Image (cartoon, rainbow, N blue to C red; front, side, top):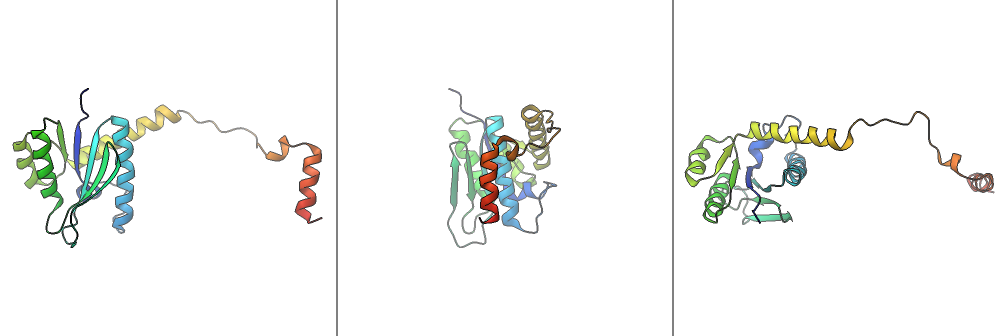
Length: 172
C-alpha cells in the first residue's frame, strides 16, 4: 500500500497568512490552525506534521500525536521550526517518502529543494485549504432548507402528559 504524502507545515508562518485567524492570542490561533489542518488532512488523505517554534522555551522538542496521520511538533530549546522541518524532511526523503513543505521562508526553500522535497508557499496552501473547506461544505451540506413551521415538543405529547408537565411547572 502506498503511503500518504507527508506535509511538514511551518505553523506560525501559515498563521500569519491565514486571514480569518486573529493573531492577538496565539494559543487560540494555534488551536484554530490545528483543527483546520486536521480536518484538511483527513479530507485530502495526507499526513501532516504541524511545526511550531518554541525556540525561546527551555523545554525539549515536544510532539502531540492526534492520530496516525496528524501530529503537532513544538521545537525544542534553541531550535527553530525551520530546523525541525529541515531535519524531518531529510529523514523522510531518505525513507523514500513523498515530502511537501509548507513555508514561505526563503531560507528554507533551497535546503528543502536540495533534500528532494516539494515546497508550497503558505498563501498557496491556505487557498487550497479554503477551497477544500468550501467543497466539503457544498458536498455535505448542500442546500439546507429550514422547516417552514416550528416543530415543538408540545405538539408531539398527549394531553395527559401536557397536563402533568403543567402541574409540575406550577409547583402543584
